[in-house]
Image 1 (tube, rainbow, N blue to C red):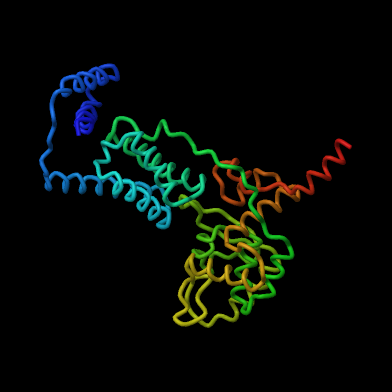
Image 2: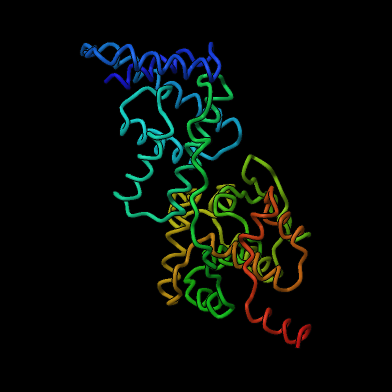
Length: 332
C-alpha cells in the first residue's frame, strides 16, 4: 500500500520536478513512511471517478486513431487490448508503470500460450496508446519506452503455387467467387479494399481500379485480361441494383463483408484441398511473384500501397530455387 501511495505522489509531481528531485522525493517518502501503516478508505466514489477517467482517455485515443484513418476493425482491436490491460491492473492509467506492463505481458503470454509475434503486437498497441498520452500531456513519459521489441523467429510464410490457384478456380461454383479469386490474385489488394470496391471504381479500358487503402489513401491497382473477362461476365449476370462490386448471392444482395470473403475463400481452400487459405495469402503471393519475375521492389511497394519499403520486403519472400540458379550462374 505504501508503494502505491508513494507512486501516486511522485506521478502527481512529475510535471513539476526534474528527475533528480523526483528521486529525492521518492527516497524521502520511503524513509518517512517506514514506521507508519497506511490505510486507504474504501472510497467507491474515487474508484468510479478513476474508472470514468480511464474510459475517457481510451475513447479519446480511439477517436484520434479514427481521425488518422484507422479502420473500425483496427480500433476495435486497440480498444479490446487496452481495456483488457486496465481491467487486469485495476488502477489509474496515469499510474501504470513499466513493471506493470512487463508483468502483464509475461502473464498474458503464459495464460494465452500465444506466440512472440502476438505479444509484440500487444506491446505495440500499448506503445501507441501511452505515446499518445505522452504527446497529449496526460502523462510525463510513456512506461512502454523501455520495453523493447519482442524477438521472434523469422518464418518464411507460405504462398500459393500456380497449381493451388488453379485448383481453387476449378472449385468455384459461381461466377462471383471466381471473379473474387481472380481479383485477389491479379491485384494483390487487401480484403478490406476488395469489399469496399464499387462498380464505378472499375476502369475496364485501363484494366484498373481505385481502392481506398490504409489511412484513407487512394491508389490505383491493376488486373489482368482474364480478370476483366470474368468481371464483365459477373456484372452482366447481376440483377440487383447495389453499387457494391461484390454482393451476397441471396436477396437483398448486400455488400459482402470482410468476414464473408474470408469464409468464402476458406471454404474454397478446403474443397480444393489447399492448406491455410485466406485473402491475405493472395497478396503475399502477388508480391513474391512480382519480385521473383524482376519487378523493381519500389514498384511492388507502390502497387501494394506500403509506406515503408521494409514492409514490402517482408511480404516478398525470395524463391529459394532462384537463389540456387543465381548461385550457379554467378558463382559456379
